Image 1 (cartoon, one colour):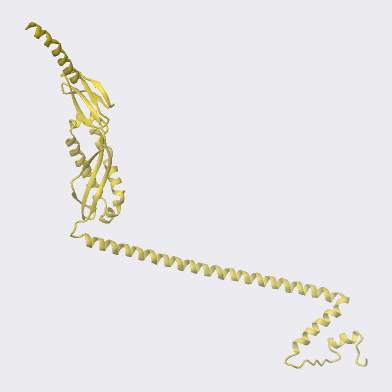
Image 2 (spheres, rainbow, N blue to C red; image 1 turned 180 degrees about the vertical axis):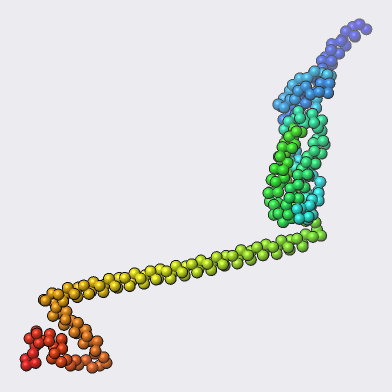
Length: 296
Protein backbone atom coordinates (compact mmCIF):
# COMPACT_ATOMS: atom_id res chain seq x y z
CA UNK A 1 0.00 0.00 0.00
CA UNK A 2 2.78 2.37 0.99
CA UNK A 3 4.63 1.37 -2.13
CA UNK A 4 1.64 2.28 -4.37
CA UNK A 5 1.19 5.59 -2.57
CA UNK A 6 4.86 6.36 -3.06
CA UNK A 7 4.45 5.84 -6.79
CA UNK A 8 1.49 8.24 -6.98
CA UNK A 9 3.35 11.12 -5.35
CA UNK A 10 5.61 11.89 -8.38
CA UNK A 11 2.65 11.64 -10.69
CA UNK A 12 0.69 14.10 -8.56
CA UNK A 13 3.63 16.47 -8.49
CA UNK A 14 3.91 16.38 -12.28
CA UNK A 15 0.17 17.00 -12.65
CA UNK A 16 0.32 19.93 -10.24
CA UNK A 17 3.31 21.39 -12.10
CA UNK A 18 1.50 21.05 -15.42
CA UNK A 19 -1.58 22.77 -14.03
CA UNK A 20 0.54 25.55 -12.57
CA UNK A 21 2.44 25.96 -15.82
CA UNK A 22 -0.79 26.08 -17.81
CA UNK A 23 -2.20 28.67 -15.43
CA UNK A 24 0.97 30.75 -15.54
CA UNK A 25 1.79 30.86 -19.26
CA UNK A 26 0.03 33.48 -21.42
CA UNK A 27 0.08 33.40 -25.23
CA UNK A 28 -0.47 36.69 -27.09
CA UNK A 29 -1.26 36.43 -30.81
CA UNK A 30 -0.51 39.13 -33.44
CA UNK A 31 -4.15 40.22 -33.83
CA UNK A 32 -4.93 40.72 -30.13
CA UNK A 33 -4.06 42.47 -26.90
CA UNK A 34 -3.72 40.52 -23.64
CA UNK A 35 -5.05 42.24 -20.52
CA UNK A 36 -3.70 40.88 -17.21
CA UNK A 37 -5.95 41.69 -14.24
CA UNK A 38 -5.40 41.13 -10.56
CA UNK A 39 -8.40 41.36 -8.25
CA UNK A 40 -10.36 43.12 -10.99
CA UNK A 41 -7.74 45.81 -11.69
CA UNK A 42 -5.50 46.03 -14.75
CA UNK A 43 -2.05 44.80 -13.82
CA UNK A 44 -0.45 44.88 -17.27
CA UNK A 45 -1.19 44.83 -21.00
CA UNK A 46 0.72 42.57 -23.37
CA UNK A 47 0.80 44.06 -26.89
CA UNK A 48 3.77 42.14 -28.31
CA UNK A 49 2.98 38.68 -29.74
CA UNK A 50 4.59 35.77 -27.89
CA UNK A 51 4.70 33.97 -24.50
CA UNK A 52 4.60 35.64 -21.09
CA UNK A 53 3.89 34.66 -17.48
CA UNK A 54 1.30 35.59 -14.88
CA UNK A 55 0.52 34.56 -11.31
CA UNK A 56 -1.60 31.44 -11.47
CA UNK A 57 -5.09 31.60 -9.97
CA UNK A 58 -4.51 35.18 -8.77
CA UNK A 59 -4.23 37.03 -12.07
CA UNK A 60 -6.80 36.62 -14.84
CA UNK A 61 -6.54 37.15 -18.60
CA UNK A 62 -8.80 39.06 -21.02
CA UNK A 63 -8.33 39.27 -24.79
CA UNK A 64 -9.30 42.18 -27.02
CA UNK A 65 -8.82 42.54 -30.76
CA UNK A 66 -5.81 44.33 -32.22
CA UNK A 67 -6.95 44.74 -35.83
CA UNK A 68 -9.19 46.83 -38.05
CA UNK A 69 -12.85 46.30 -37.21
CA UNK A 70 -16.04 47.04 -39.12
CA UNK A 71 -19.32 48.24 -37.70
CA UNK A 72 -22.41 48.50 -39.90
CA UNK A 73 -24.77 51.27 -38.79
CA UNK A 74 -28.50 50.81 -39.05
CA UNK A 75 -30.19 52.50 -42.01
CA UNK A 76 -31.40 55.89 -40.81
CA UNK A 77 -33.65 58.71 -42.02
CA UNK A 78 -32.00 62.14 -41.74
CA UNK A 79 -33.25 65.63 -42.63
CA UNK A 80 -31.44 68.17 -44.83
CA UNK A 81 -31.22 71.94 -44.30
CA UNK A 82 -34.13 72.48 -46.67
CA UNK A 83 -36.26 69.97 -44.71
CA UNK A 84 -35.95 67.13 -47.20
CA UNK A 85 -35.68 63.52 -46.09
CA UNK A 86 -32.63 61.39 -46.99
CA UNK A 87 -32.07 57.67 -46.37
CA UNK A 88 -28.50 57.00 -45.16
CA UNK A 89 -26.82 53.60 -44.98
CA UNK A 90 -23.28 53.82 -43.56
CA UNK A 91 -20.52 51.68 -42.09
CA UNK A 92 -17.50 52.49 -39.93
CA UNK A 93 -13.92 51.20 -39.91
CA UNK A 94 -12.27 51.45 -36.51
CA UNK A 95 -9.58 49.98 -34.27
CA UNK A 96 -8.58 49.87 -30.62
CA UNK A 97 -5.76 52.37 -30.24
CA UNK A 98 -5.43 52.43 -26.44
CA UNK A 99 -6.33 49.08 -24.85
CA UNK A 100 -6.07 50.54 -21.31
CA UNK A 101 -8.71 53.25 -21.97
CA UNK A 102 -10.80 50.77 -23.91
CA UNK A 103 -10.85 48.35 -20.98
CA UNK A 104 -11.40 51.03 -18.32
CA UNK A 105 -14.25 52.87 -20.07
CA UNK A 106 -15.95 50.09 -22.02
CA UNK A 107 -15.06 47.03 -19.90
CA UNK A 108 -13.26 45.67 -22.99
CA UNK A 109 -16.65 44.81 -24.49
CA UNK A 110 -17.03 45.17 -28.24
CA UNK A 111 -20.79 45.67 -27.91
CA UNK A 112 -20.20 48.68 -25.63
CA UNK A 113 -17.76 50.12 -28.18
CA UNK A 114 -20.19 49.67 -31.06
CA UNK A 115 -22.95 51.38 -29.07
CA UNK A 116 -20.71 54.44 -28.55
CA UNK A 117 -19.64 54.43 -32.21
CA UNK A 118 -23.23 54.17 -33.40
CA UNK A 119 -24.37 57.10 -31.26
CA UNK A 120 -21.48 59.41 -32.13
CA UNK A 121 -21.39 58.67 -35.86
CA UNK A 122 -25.17 58.95 -36.23
CA UNK A 123 -25.23 62.32 -34.45
CA UNK A 124 -22.39 63.58 -36.61
CA UNK A 125 -24.11 62.32 -39.77
CA UNK A 126 -27.31 64.10 -38.74
CA UNK A 127 -25.45 67.35 -37.93
CA UNK A 128 -23.56 67.42 -41.24
CA UNK A 129 -26.56 66.60 -43.43
CA UNK A 130 -28.78 69.08 -41.58
CA UNK A 131 -26.30 71.82 -42.52
CA UNK A 132 -26.54 71.02 -46.25
CA UNK A 133 -29.30 71.25 -48.83
CA UNK A 134 -30.58 68.11 -50.46
CA UNK A 135 -28.77 68.93 -53.70
CA UNK A 136 -25.49 69.50 -51.82
CA UNK A 137 -25.88 66.14 -50.07
CA UNK A 138 -26.46 64.32 -53.36
CA UNK A 139 -23.53 66.12 -54.99
CA UNK A 140 -21.25 65.27 -52.05
CA UNK A 141 -21.69 61.51 -52.22
CA UNK A 142 -18.32 61.13 -53.96
CA UNK A 143 -16.39 61.57 -50.69
CA UNK A 144 -16.91 65.16 -49.58
CA UNK A 145 -19.72 64.15 -47.24
CA UNK A 146 -17.78 61.39 -45.45
CA UNK A 147 -14.82 63.75 -45.06
CA UNK A 148 -17.11 66.32 -43.44
CA UNK A 149 -18.49 63.65 -41.07
CA UNK A 150 -14.97 62.59 -40.03
CA UNK A 151 -14.03 66.21 -39.35
CA UNK A 152 -17.19 66.70 -37.33
CA UNK A 153 -16.44 63.67 -35.15
CA UNK A 154 -12.83 64.71 -34.62
CA UNK A 155 -11.25 63.01 -31.60
CA UNK A 156 -14.49 62.26 -29.73
CA UNK A 157 -13.82 58.51 -29.61
CA UNK A 158 -10.27 58.86 -28.30
CA UNK A 159 -11.57 58.95 -24.71
CA UNK A 160 -12.64 55.34 -25.20
CA UNK A 161 -9.30 54.27 -26.68
CA UNK A 162 -10.86 54.01 -30.13
CA UNK A 163 -9.43 55.41 -33.36
CA UNK A 164 -11.87 56.00 -36.18
CA UNK A 165 -10.35 55.04 -39.54
CA UNK A 166 -13.18 55.88 -41.92
CA UNK A 167 -16.89 56.55 -42.22
CA UNK A 168 -18.24 55.37 -45.55
CA UNK A 169 -21.73 55.61 -47.06
CA UNK A 170 -23.01 52.50 -48.79
CA UNK A 171 -25.98 54.50 -50.03
CA UNK A 172 -27.39 57.95 -49.48
CA UNK A 173 -30.57 58.35 -51.41
CA UNK A 174 -33.99 59.93 -51.55
CA UNK A 175 -37.15 58.22 -50.34
CA UNK A 176 -38.78 56.37 -53.21
CA UNK A 177 -41.91 58.52 -53.17
CA UNK A 178 -40.14 61.77 -54.15
CA UNK A 179 -36.96 60.55 -55.85
CA UNK A 180 -38.10 61.20 -59.44
CA UNK A 181 -39.47 64.66 -58.68
CA UNK A 182 -36.23 65.76 -57.03
CA UNK A 183 -34.07 64.43 -59.86
CA UNK A 184 -36.22 66.22 -62.45
CA UNK A 185 -35.94 69.48 -60.50
CA UNK A 186 -32.17 69.11 -60.26
CA UNK A 187 -31.92 68.44 -64.01
CA UNK A 188 -34.01 71.54 -64.71
CA UNK A 189 -31.81 73.66 -62.43
CA UNK A 190 -28.64 72.35 -64.07
CA UNK A 191 -30.09 73.15 -67.51
CA UNK A 192 -30.89 76.70 -66.36
CA UNK A 193 -27.34 77.12 -65.08
CA UNK A 194 -25.95 75.81 -68.39
CA UNK A 195 -28.17 78.24 -70.33
CA UNK A 196 -26.94 81.12 -68.17
CA UNK A 197 -23.31 80.18 -68.80
CA UNK A 198 -24.01 79.92 -72.53
CA UNK A 199 -25.65 83.37 -72.63
CA UNK A 200 -22.74 84.86 -70.69
CA UNK A 201 -20.32 83.24 -73.13
CA UNK A 202 -22.16 84.66 -76.12
CA UNK A 203 -22.18 88.14 -74.58
CA UNK A 204 -18.47 87.90 -73.86
CA UNK A 205 -17.83 86.77 -77.44
CA UNK A 206 -19.84 89.76 -78.70
CA UNK A 207 -17.81 92.13 -76.54
CA UNK A 208 -14.59 90.62 -77.84
CA UNK A 209 -15.79 91.01 -81.44
CA UNK A 210 -16.76 94.66 -80.85
CA UNK A 211 -13.42 95.34 -79.22
CA UNK A 212 -11.61 93.70 -82.14
CA UNK A 213 -13.58 95.79 -84.67
CA UNK A 214 -12.75 98.97 -82.77
CA UNK A 215 -9.08 98.03 -82.69
CA UNK A 216 -9.14 97.40 -86.46
CA UNK A 217 -10.71 100.83 -87.06
CA UNK A 218 -8.08 102.49 -84.89
CA UNK A 219 -5.28 100.63 -86.67
CA UNK A 220 -6.74 101.59 -90.09
CA UNK A 221 -7.00 105.21 -89.02
CA UNK A 222 -3.41 105.17 -87.80
CA UNK A 223 -2.29 103.58 -91.09
CA UNK A 224 -4.16 106.25 -93.10
CA UNK A 225 -2.58 108.99 -91.01
CA UNK A 226 0.87 107.51 -91.55
CA UNK A 227 0.23 107.22 -95.31
CA UNK A 228 -0.95 110.84 -95.47
CA UNK A 229 2.15 111.90 -93.55
CA UNK A 230 4.39 109.98 -95.96
CA UNK A 231 2.61 111.52 -98.99
CA UNK A 232 2.92 114.98 -97.48
CA UNK A 233 6.61 114.43 -96.86
CA UNK A 234 7.03 113.17 -100.44
CA UNK A 235 5.27 116.21 -101.88
CA UNK A 236 7.32 118.50 -99.69
CA UNK A 237 10.48 116.83 -100.88
CA UNK A 238 9.24 117.09 -104.47
CA UNK A 239 8.61 120.82 -104.07
CA UNK A 240 12.01 121.28 -102.45
CA UNK A 241 13.74 119.54 -105.34
CA UNK A 242 11.64 121.52 -107.83
CA UNK A 243 12.49 124.77 -106.09
CA UNK A 244 16.19 123.98 -106.16
CA UNK A 245 15.92 123.09 -109.84
CA UNK A 246 14.27 126.42 -110.74
CA UNK A 247 16.94 128.23 -108.84
CA UNK A 248 19.61 126.43 -110.88
CA UNK A 249 19.94 128.14 -114.32
CA UNK A 250 21.26 124.98 -115.93
CA UNK A 251 18.21 122.94 -114.87
CA UNK A 252 15.50 125.59 -114.95
CA UNK A 253 14.79 125.26 -118.73
CA UNK A 254 14.63 121.47 -118.51
CA UNK A 255 12.13 121.43 -115.62
CA UNK A 256 10.11 124.15 -117.31
CA UNK A 257 9.96 121.97 -120.40
CA UNK A 258 8.79 118.96 -118.38
CA UNK A 259 6.06 120.92 -116.63
CA UNK A 260 4.88 122.28 -120.02
CA UNK A 261 4.71 118.77 -121.41
CA UNK A 262 2.69 117.62 -118.37
CA UNK A 263 0.28 120.51 -118.90
CA UNK A 264 -0.03 119.71 -122.60
CA UNK A 265 -0.59 116.01 -121.89
CA UNK A 266 -3.43 116.89 -119.56
CA UNK A 267 -5.24 118.73 -122.40
CA UNK A 268 -5.07 115.78 -124.83
CA UNK A 269 -8.29 113.73 -124.71
CA UNK A 270 -9.82 111.19 -127.04
CA UNK A 271 -7.95 110.06 -130.17
CA UNK A 272 -6.70 113.49 -131.24
CA UNK A 273 -3.02 113.72 -130.34
CA UNK A 274 -2.24 116.93 -132.35
CA UNK A 275 -0.96 119.79 -130.26
CA UNK A 276 -1.19 123.34 -131.62
CA UNK A 277 0.78 125.85 -129.63
CA UNK A 278 1.28 129.57 -129.93
CA UNK A 279 4.80 130.74 -130.59
CA UNK A 280 4.64 132.70 -127.34
CA UNK A 281 3.78 129.63 -125.27
CA UNK A 282 6.40 128.17 -122.88
CA UNK A 283 6.71 125.01 -124.98
CA UNK A 284 7.36 126.97 -128.18
CA UNK A 285 9.82 129.19 -126.38
CA UNK A 286 11.73 126.13 -125.25
CA UNK A 287 11.96 124.87 -128.81
CA UNK A 288 12.99 128.32 -130.02
CA UNK A 289 15.62 128.62 -127.35
CA UNK A 290 16.95 125.21 -128.33
CA UNK A 291 17.44 126.29 -131.94
CA UNK A 292 14.19 124.99 -133.45
CA UNK A 293 12.71 128.12 -135.15
CA UNK A 294 9.82 128.26 -137.57
CA UNK A 295 12.13 129.19 -140.38
CA UNK A 296 14.34 126.16 -139.94
